[in-house]
Length: 282
Image 1 (cartoon, rainbow, N blue to C red):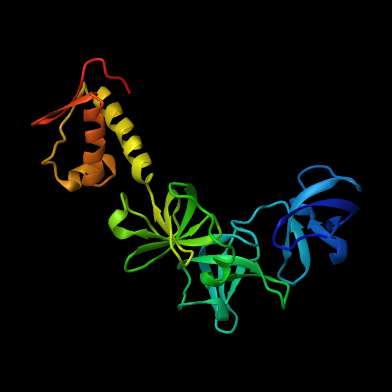
Image 2 (cartoon, rainbow, N blue to C red):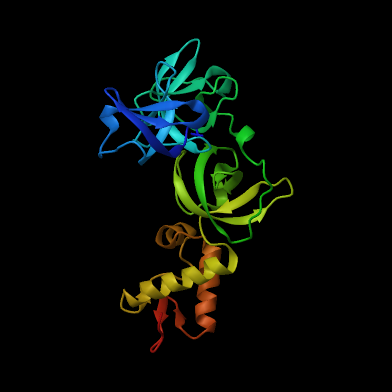
């Protein structure tokens, strides 16, 4: 059976003037309009297509790929607004995606951008968007290990920092005080799990946590020394702002990395900066 809102590998059943008809299983035949046919196909051959409903509520297929599919979270632009139905979002297909009024959490207008979850409405069998992200998150227990790299979608700003969707499944928090670079709503980033809280939510970081972060920074410092004639003008009195600008970390982490390099006899700590010791390699 063809899955609505997903890509499917469907068999061509027949060719007609409107295009190709594909076997949709219990959904019956599904039309792939002629304008989407790029290669010669004959009955019995299989095509990789996306299945959705057109403006007349008919199931159709397309070889185009939308910006998000059922089960995905995405950052989409509001194209238009209907007082009764809700907002319509640009998801990369000719028919815009409906964000019903009941699924909105704040007023919207054309030109706004919003993070939504894409789902198949069980009552209407139509693909819709929802801004009520909590309903789609955390249904499975979070099973992440400390320092684990994860994919993030920045979803909203909070007084503490930024909420992010982790691996399309869970909610996590990037604390403002731990941010090493600016982030924006809708950014897709690689981050790291710091801890899993008792409520199942995750504390996150944009940099490797703990020992891994220090190890990564020591390599960055050594590379900087080797590329700058063996000297860098950073020391104990360098301001935290300069450290963060140069290395993207807090001064505390920077000093931890310097300590590790000093104890391993790879650098010297001078009043005006740090120097690479002769014979030291990255």
